[in-house]
Image 1 (cartoon, one colour):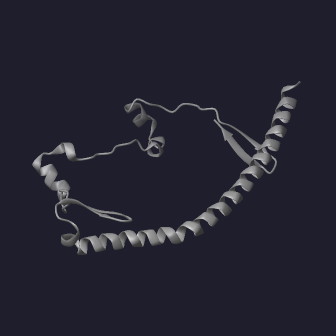
Image 2: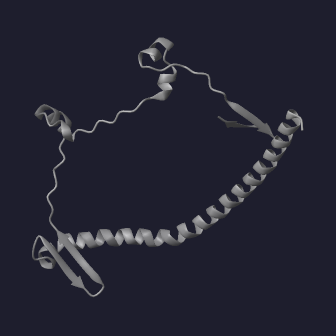
Image 3: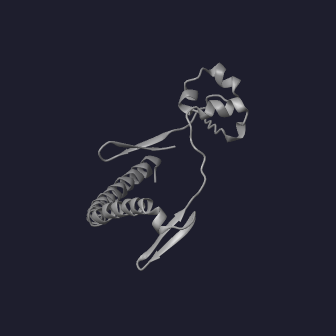
Length: 155
């Protein structure tokens, strides 16, 4: 079989398979959306009520703290569950903390995140690329079109 005939055969098969994949994915997306909508409605009311109940429990516990709890770590057992209370110490977050931490020389609590902006590196001049130990290289990029002129990239 000649190379062009082989390429034609592969493109034909790719178009057929791509069409089947897209059809199944579209069908699956519709089914998933329908199922998600059903369960979102079913769960929505209960989730909203649960949030309200949790807020009400905390509010009630805070209001009746002295009546419900006898120590800094206590539990009030009731027929349907338990209310829990615990006092913990947390660091108060203040404005200007970063500057104060730097001034105090406590560097191990400062988080610095660095990463390379490759889009910006792509725009550098060749001499700047050499300074950082890299260069532009040729890269083969193969694409193909099937059916309705959709390009597909495979690097």
